[in-house]
Length: 308
Ligand code: AMP
Image (tube, rainbow, N blue to C red; front, side, top):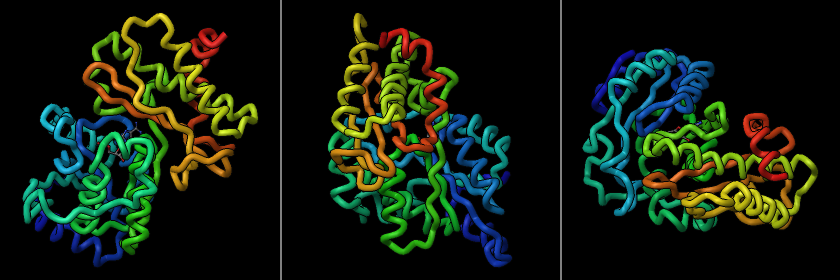
């Protein structure tokens, strides 16, 4: 695996494969890599000839009170993992490569409708920072495909919208959420959790499993699904001295991210909560062939004994 630290070197390295008609796959990350990132690299490996992963902690997507400085960094570990997942090029740009005119430059704004709910109102400016860095990375690597995780569903959706609306020609691929065996969605921010917080964090995925289970029994009414989710959340936290602080628990249409009375072809139930120093998010797809069905078996046992 080649490690490239500046934009010019990336351009010249990709020149030959591009000319030879090779398909380039891009996997943007902020590092502190785990198997969730690994699944994106492997998906890119299976669909592209050249796999480029980027590790760049993007300052413009962090709010003033967020964890930019504390964000976990593990350059050596990342390098080792990427190599083992079959990555060809690790691109680790400097701020000056990505923001040559400084951090106060142009911002790509998502459509208001896609950020009026979920993380949008809680993280003002976040998705503009995400879209800006992703467009810059697409411009630097000029891939055929770029791979993102369902774990950050709203992020994937705004990126997909931007890529289409700005005529980038890049295919934006959504890969399923990778979870720990007990159901917790993998996240670099899980590193912030103390052991007892790690145990309590399971309430997010279990709440979502309860909603998915309700959906599978035929419930399509969004409000009924949301009420079931809230009940599950409260049951799981019952008796806990310091439960996670719920930020939101929403059931929306997967395409528009807007509330709808009934879930149509595809819905999404999404949750965000604070636990100690960590802000955790997770979601499940509400669809007949939901990619999250495995979560039900991971959560069974504790889920149904506590709901009973
Ligand atoms: P991050 O490094 O957290 O910015 O994430 C980089 C990419 O990895 C994003 O597209 C995320 O959605 C994706 N990702 C993060 N966690 C997971 C996970 N548990 N499963 C699948 N993809 C993930």
